[in-house]
Length: 314
Image (cartoon, one colour):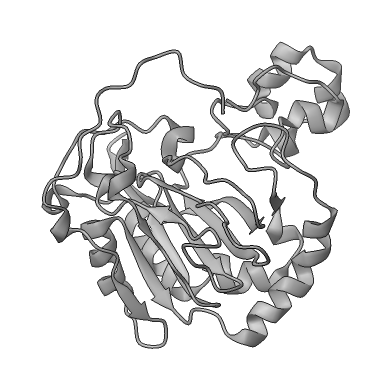
């Protein structure tokens, strides 16, 4: 991403680091309530053996041709040695059913992202519940020589603003999204395991990350890391000579974060094409910086109409 012209505030290390950790649970026996409590306390949790070897084999069979067809990223958010494939719901039913809809992941998202809202229509009181929705899907192949990705929060796309709190003060709804990363191959510190800052979800929104607070989420094949989008994290450098870090990822977000009328289905694409760029952006075909609304990690205006908007992702 482009460097900011604003000088960030001085970084402060998390206090009492010992109280933050990344708990591990067995996927066969874990209960959603225990996972939710661990995530509220630490910001993320590791679930061992979420997927079987057969399920991982099916995932790789589905996505490997797409990975090998990818090219190096034009920019600095991803290392040039990284290959990525998006839109996985349309490429792998196994990914949809066993990652996006995994019962433990879905239970966590339902508990922390669902919104119950009471309102009046005339003299009649109504109650509505908005359930979470898929936000993004991707598989990342980090290959030897890849540099470390900068620590970042994925809720930056929603301009999520919050103050510093304690875990006891955390309430569902503070976060806009929850992510999952499932290891397709063994991930280690050496080959690029995700760096994750436990407790960073409790820091204020404008506090910068502290690299020294990060831990490496090392996973065996089939293990998963589930984390709040307000947690600082980033891929690490792959310092090996011949190991690929293969991780399947998804984010789920609040169901209320969408347009009321679905413009993409309500208006024919040919009609959208006839409008000027400014109108196309207003109708939802642009990108809300940073990174919200992309298609194949590009602006829809570029993919659909061949337009190139400078710095359109961020």
